[in-house]
Every structure is written in structure tokens, then in C-alpha cells.
Length: 225
Image (cartoon, rainbow, N blue to C red):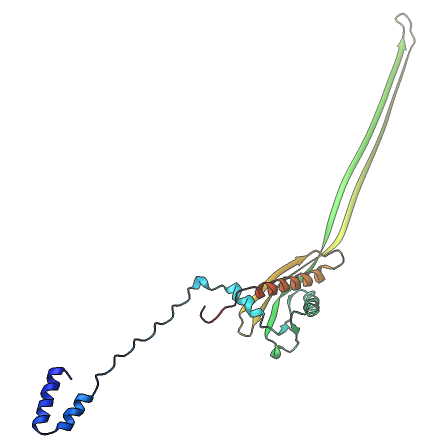
């Protein structure tokens, strides 16, 4: 109620002898001003979100990993077994054959190609020698002449054919929502003491270990960030 109207109302109440109501009306405090709502947090710009770093950080939450059957040729099943052995030996995750208990899944394709590599060279060596001699007289009828020619040649052809293996695998780790957390592609012609397929499995494991170490060094994201 405005001050002028409040004074008029008070005088009217006093005129009727209602002093208690007039005093109660004066005792009503004015309404308190409402506090302004807190400002909403500013949205995080899309440029500040690192999907690669986010995927690596989620790798650290994986406890059980299920390695699905790899697509590819006949060697895909063998390469899968080698990947299981390599990751299990490295102690990166607990490998489970029960997909329902897994925190994440490794999927992909693998192939071990067999091809022949040929090397061919040819060398030729030749040697020739000749001589000639003659004798005669101007007034004589008889004459002598001798000639000789010697030649030696040698040809050498070398052809080597070697059977080789080239293994390649492209794998990825996805969570239960289907988000890709990590991926790599590795290939090998074989190592000194390891076949091509076993070397690919070892390269995948070493790359996964390196990326897990990288994830542990990333700054911790908080709710305010």
C-alpha cells in the first residue's frame, strides 16, 4: 500500500475507534526484495573438448576386456588368439570370454597374406685374343701366313624366390554404448625371432600400453572444467 493511502486508511480506522487495526497495519513490514537468481554457468566451448583425450581417460576405467572374433581371412582367428595372449601377458586388462561381464570390447579385422618375392640377376664375362703373322718375298712365289683367335665367355644367371608373410590388423576398443575409445593399425613382415602375426599382436599390445601410460599423465577433468 502506498504511504498516502496508508495514512488515509489509518485515519479512517481511528475515526471508527479501531486503533488496534491501525497499529497492526503500521506493524506490517514492507516485502523484502527478492534475490536475483545466480547466473547460469557458461557452456564449455566445443573447441575445448578433446575427444581423443576423453577416450584415453575412459581406458583407465576398463577392468575386463572382451576380444571379439576378428573379421578377415583364415588367419584372423589365429591373430585374435595371439592378441589375447599378448594383452593378458602384459597385464593391461583382465581378458574375459563372457561378453556380459566385459567393460569394453576389442573389435576389428586381421589378415596374414602370403606372397613370393623374387630376385633375379645376370652376369656375363667375355675375353677374346687374336694374333696374325705373315712372311713373303717380292720376287718369290711362296709366302707364309699364320693367324689365331681365342675367345672365352661365361654367363651366370641367378634367380632366388622366397616365400614371405605380411600380417596386418586394424583393431579398436569400444565401450558398451558403442563409443570408440581407442584404435590402432599395425602391420609386419615378421621380426627376427617372431612371425608376422605374432609381431602384429605384440605391436598392438605395445601401442595400447603406451597410450595407457599417456592417459595416466593427462590432467584430471573436474566438474567445474
